[in-house]
Image (cartoon, rainbow, N blue to C red; front, side, top):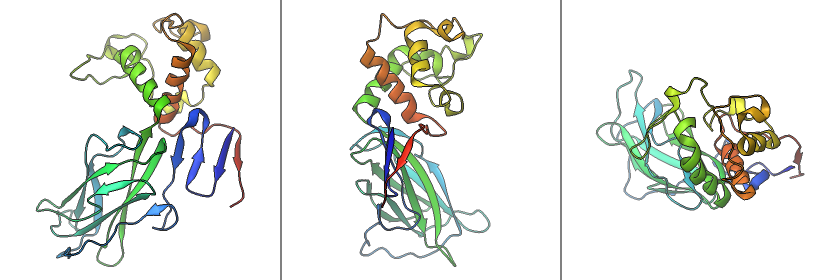
Length: 251
């Protein structure tokens, strides 16, 4: 069962929490503090993400890559000297939280996620010419159980389930006649129950009349390992996993 309290926090199975930024910079949303000496010399009309969004990190730690955004004008030309503010739920830190765009029109910050596991919605704001322009960025923080699932997935699963190769691992995805679902493929995996995912992990694909290329891991993984893998799958699903049975508490 899921219990929801107010508008900024949702408790989910396996202990992961989704923190939702409010549409205005109040409540759970943490605003950027004024930075003395920073004065905009230009304004833009659009702000876009260059890199650093949709990262998966660990609670209470900085994301591996900085968040980089770009401010442009009406013609799509980069704007130098535009003010950019980074905002997020309580517990999220930005270094810096307020910055002026550089000569390429970009603003860069390091994001440290909060203490709760889950999906964080951040907002990046530039004043604009007539009204503020806002960009929403989503990052995910893994708690202990999800982090364990991530480690297990990297050790046993990602060689086939992740179509992208890395310096440490060459993907086998393209060589498989039946393509396995990436763990982020929420459109498919969100429809499967925890019991079904457990059966496939423990007994292999044929347990649910699926591909025999999915081997059984029942003798390799413990019950706690299987739960961690499922928790990780739920945490990184896109679109986000929405378990049935949500209970809304009074504000």
